[in-house]
Length: 176
Image (cartoon, rainbow, N blue to C red; front, side):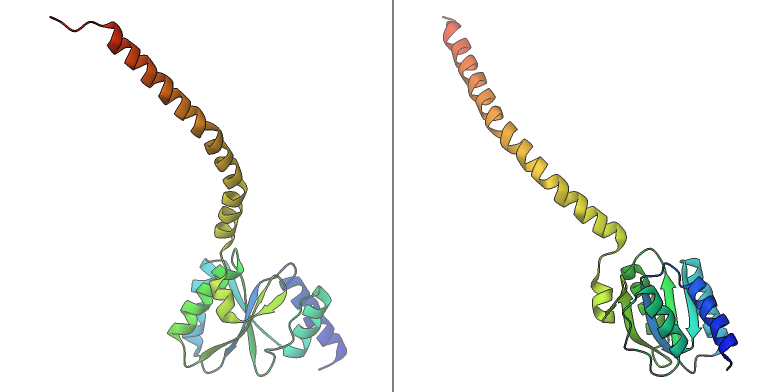
């Protein structure tokens, strides 16, 4: 392949993978055209794309982007990318791999530009889960503080009400 053609392919890869920080490297060998097309269409509906790449060119492009992907480049490589988070991507890929387990194998996952074992990628929280955890951690000190402020005040109010009710009972004479 000439240098000009390689450069054109690298430019196309740079355009396709610009801004991509989460992906899964797959080996799809022996999967027929019809099942592969159905798989691609179902993933595309979920915002996930598959792209087969030439290993040496993809490694150069990812190195230019600052992604640390060094393993998983043996044999044919198809890259799954897209979705809202690394966890969502991993879960969708896992579902597809389970359907085609004899013809598809996961090589490695990439989360936030770093290589991650696919098992760990499956356990990561989705973007929404991570945001809710952060929000709960931010709000928990405030809720504890408000509980500490209102707790003693509520006890004092309860004691005052009890004293008031006791005085009312003393003031009213019993009927004779």
